[in-house]
Amino acid sequence: MLSWMAWTWPTALLFIGIFSAIGVLVVLEIRHPGGDARKGVLGLTTTRGDRLFISLLGSSYIFLAWLGLVGLPLWVPLGLALAWGSFCFWKV
Image 1: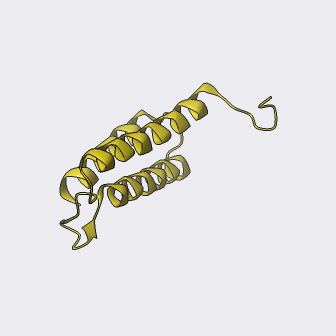
Image 2: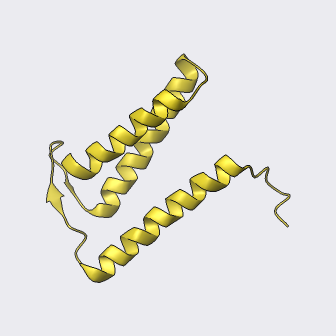
């Protein structure tokens, strides 16, 4: 059924995590409409969805830079990506 793409458990978990985050944002938007807009340290007025997008985009750059400059293992960029995501949701 899914033989057109080489699915692995890490790939599946990544997509499950992203879609779960979007699901949480949908539930938060239903319970508290408006997107919780605020102006952060970057001077941007962002909503929850904007902050999720910025954190996912930054995390992908962190992993790509790490792979290009250092290589494996990927535990350090995972920590950096989690720290970046926390920063985005608290301060951006």
